[in-house]
Image 1 (cartoon, helix red, strand yellow):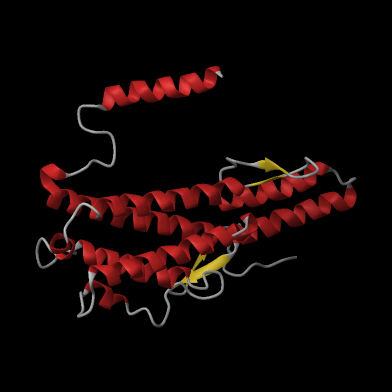
Image 2: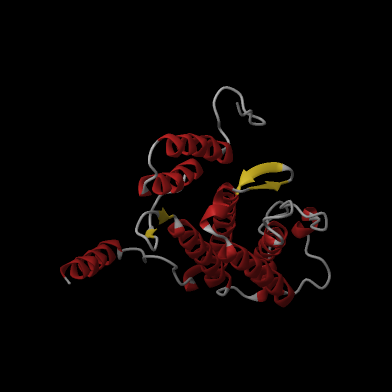
Length: 247
């Protein structure tokens, strides 16, 4: 008999689900001839328990199993899109607008950039081996523009944080997605931690877009489909992918 910590009636934590079903597969292999199906089943179980969709899968050398490499690739792409969206926005504002607050309770673009940089550095430094909220972070100071916080210094902080994220996510293996890390002591699977960061930083990118568009006014260069051009854009995209399908 196996007892899992923190579990009641039924298993809920992904790593426990994976272990429990793999034990069932072990028993199956012990009493029945081994086959390629059991290897495929093991990986499928891990993917299922993590909540990963098997998109972008590829066959292994023997053609017996598959690995969920697609999720990590897509996560990196999404992080890059978030970063690019924010940068294309604040590239359209002056230094004065970069630091401007709409009111006392609002965050300026500068404050958001400082906060994101600090959060990224804390979360992604030694990601797999230390808690995501580092003792030297001092989060509250991220919402104060201190003496010496120039646009250049804040951008350096921003770039350093994103560099850590891309390096950490880029080094992950598919099997790491069911490992457990902590943020302020709260357990997360690696998959959950990545999704949490995607949601968090897409929200901040949206704040930056809104502020930058407000300050740029009529000079704003759109980041998506221009107003009044939706039908034209949709027709062009449909034709593009239809042509690809005809090749």
